[in-house]
Image (cartoon, rainbow, N blue to C red; front, side, top):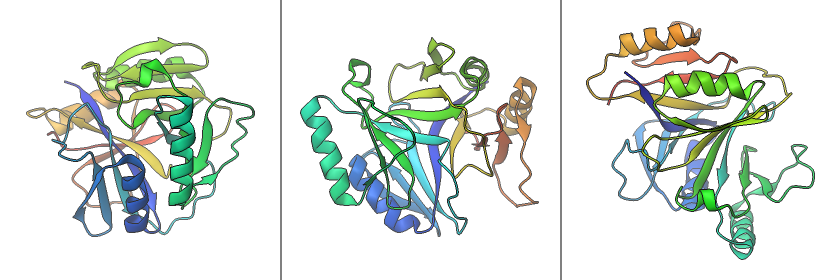
Length: 245
């Protein structure tokens, strides 16, 4: 049994407007599986597929009070393309963001609701990832997170250091998942989190038990009647275990 990362879930005050922003950023199409939910995926995409990690935006009135612990990095192919992407995204409503990054070769922006993201410098590793180069998770111990998430999913570890751990789908396609060392403490529920899905034919209860045995814990969702499971990884980051499919 295994899961794979299929999407990130982002809370939004106006999920329709924010979904429109991100669809234009990525060149993706918009759908809605339910009221208050906006789904983004590549045009003609056959979900789920490891070639992309999709985005679900879910309406929420909760305020954003701290830097998100999960964000996306966007790929660029040259210095000129980097400048072009930053200019285009700024015209769409993105704004410069200071998260203490200092003098770095990438650009940090925030979307219209303040969610941080990066436009990365050109990197050959990102040549075939699609518009999202990496999904980045802040963490205290990248090595430990690589150990948990490489067993929780069937993704392959590409790099592990004291500063970061990098995973990618075993199929060798789609964005990377990077755990980056951070000293920032987690405060409250993450506004952006990972969603993983078991494969068709797998059992949801058995997969939940497997993840709990690896070190995940069950999150308190206050008795909500939902058909998926909300878990917490060993560093306290919430993630959803979706139904097999």
